[in-house]
Image (cartoon, rainbow, N blue to C red; front, side, top):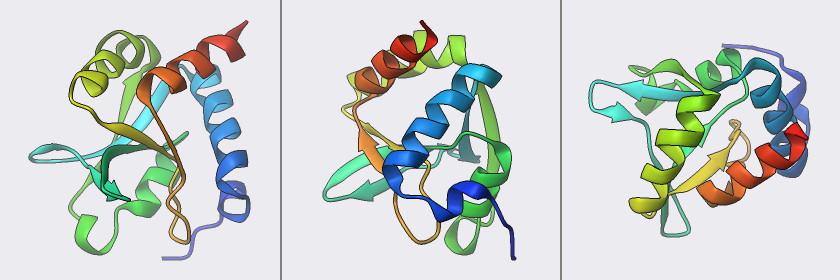
Length: 121
């Protein structure tokens, strides 16, 4: 599958910034889900939930062992009110916009929420 997307060519820090902008603009966060729930990744012994700014980037990740997964949008309101506290309670991190060549910025759920709120002002 050969998809082109501007965020495939930039570093993790720029993908984080673009993802926050997109989350605010579209008022949604994209994850991958399967029959067991949301997809989780492990990096440096931390478990986390990967998130993307749009469906096309989430779909890019749904290959190989994740080819049975589907993109799912979560409203920004649900993300902030339900997902962020739940992820914190479960001790999970957020992996922001991983792409095939790089895993993405790893950030605590409350830090991502703070960055979103700060950027909305």
